[in-house]
Picture 1 (cartoon, chains in turn brown, green):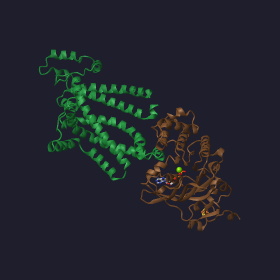
Picture 2 (spheres, protein in one colour):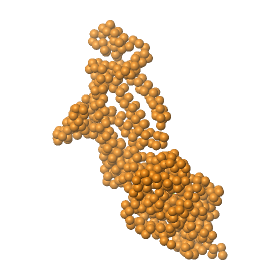
Picture 3 (cartoon, helix red, strand yellow):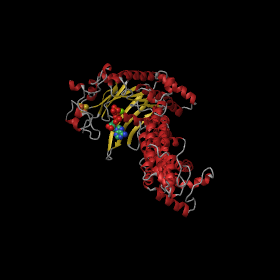
Picture 4 (cartoon, protein in one colour):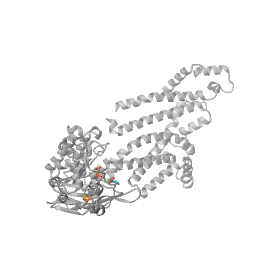
Length: 327
Length: 313
Ligand SMILES: Nc1ncnc2c1ncn2[C@@H]1O[C@H](COP(=O)(O)OP(=O)(O)OP(=O)(O)O)[C@@H](O)[C@H]1O
Ligand code: SF4
Ligand SMILES: [Mg+2]
């Protein structure tokens, strides 16, 4: 299977007020194959958005320092010039953001903002670009797209704005779509519609999708592979089936206990005791140890290695495989 | 939008009324009976009575106010005692001079202020940013009269490039007109450029951090387009209002600048009138200035509405 995206030991640090660097994404590695959907889950602040912005090259180099490699369709993005990256962004790779209410420019019409993206990457006349933008709006099932085309963002609801963002992202047929919690800001029925839309688009266009979410329920519904992040690190990686059948990291197990069923998806990941660690003062040893029911002295002093418990299933835990604990 | 505009216009009515009452009262708050002053040395009771009748000074104050308002409406602001000339005529002569000066100053302030504000936000933390901030500080803290005198000294006395004083109408001789007014316009615009620069910088920094700018970058747009079409388009909306209000400041700043450069404008008219106790002229000038302020405010509101799709709809 060829990978559309290959991320290897990607790390991101920010300089704090005092000038000290805080690493918020720590040696994250993964791959996404053509037409596959990878889910990335984890609590708020674990570094999901920063990871995706780093892949897109959208972090401000003045404040963020990035290391590791990101290979997209064989191109080593981190070694490419900014102008080459600009050519890829919005064309071969696109991103949908977490904040539908503020991600569109309030001073330009919805149509103009999509047309702009198309004309940036395709040598189309204004008329043809408009036709294509309208088609994109239709693709994401926006009612009366001809009218919406001329509307300013403030006339649209959050769900509609997110659809516009998706239409914009898809307007140039990207090979990779990064969707950063595309439904978090929206209410439940709209969430289901947007997820449906993403699934349909993947099936139609064959794009690889990196879907970021708080929510294992969403992963179960939409993804084939899943990456669990905790405090800036990948703690478990598996196919969705494997992960739900035999989770191998105590944190994942905790998240599963906290999966809300689709119908009552209100409280999120609330049942794990304790709270996310401060990234500026991480616990020694395993980062999850202060909250882990299995933690022992080794866990509290030495960071656990990544173990492959079966082909394609890895976990960062001293106690893996967890079955041995029960036995 | 029509509704919003109508409301703004309605709100103007009490403002205008209040302003007119204050200006009208000016004449009555000042010490001395205007009729006595106008009657001259002799103080002939007959003449005084005649003046009283002519200017309705024998009528109740409310009627006097109404007569005055009626006069204002037909463009009759009275007559200058000193120059024996209708005040409306004086204003019609002097106002364009000051408006030209203030407009040039505004253009200079906008070009420098907005230009440097955008530059310093885009180049935040670099030498450009530091230089622009220093310039803004200098512009805000340099007194107009000092800068004016220094410029006259340098460009007129030392280098002999520009005339030190005077005014030439642009309809007479455009290049001479520009030459004569470029220094005073720069002096006047300079202080406001600093204010505009700081506001522009702040608004641009905020816009550049916004989610929609991130979206624009995620589309692969080139940085100049991101800055001009996305960030600046939003950052400049509040600058419109600020610019219109600062234009009012320019009009009052012109009083001093016109003195320095001996420009026969509105500022000179009011200074001369005050010094010579030509109260009717003061009243007329204050009235027109207030009117200009009110119109500017209205224009600022309209500009803001037009630039803001949320209000335009
Ligand atoms: N520009 C920045 N400067 C400094 N720290 C940052 C910056 N952006 C993010 N961080 C920090 O990086 C960490 C990871 O943030 P990130 O936004 O990736 O979390 P997330 O997993 O997307 O969370 P959420 O689910 O709430 O969106 C957080 O601790 C955050 O405070
Ligand atoms: S290493 Fe120890 S503390 Fe960390 S998750 Fe595994 S058992 Fe828990
Ligand atoms: Mg996030």
